[in-house]
Image (cartoon, rainbow, N blue to C red):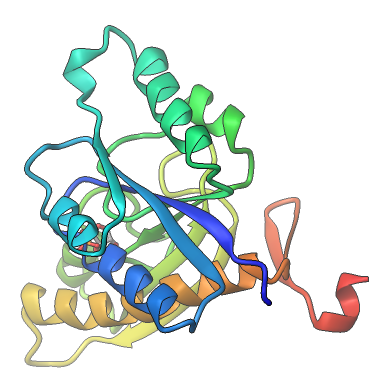
Length: 209
Ligand code: GRF
């Protein structure tokens, strides 16, 4: 029996990446289980997706806490009570602070809809479109104390077509996000990711020792 890792997914919105992770877990394409979905917004459609799959959901609203520290402390409590081993940000629209990073060092990953280090921050796809790049894409990375900055796990490129609009480009990038997010989780689950300085090495079975 394969050892599955426990995931905690943090969301704020529609949750299509969450859906892709759930689907990949259910079909055993990745050795992981979604233990809990935490949203900072009661309106996030992602919550419905989780409920439909009988996954525990908790809404933690930032304005109900007097500091980022106490807000994150609550999140950490929920993650720990679900025995979460890897935290996945999937459209979570908040900067991660010391409390969460300290509880899960090098165990928080994120997807960004641009080829980092280009176009960090909001609307990476639109930033890339407006800049006129020919190759756009998305990036899976570990989370550190700066926005969209941590060590890169994998990336996927998406060519920009002459007739693209910001929306068509965004849609094609999203398809790639749905492909590389589960891939990164599986590499983590297999213990194949090794971070040295800011480079992530993907180990072979024989390298793992
Ligand atoms: C994605 O484009 C992701 O790259 C960005 O936020 C969006 C979330 O979309 N971080 P969804 O909620 O997974 O549909």
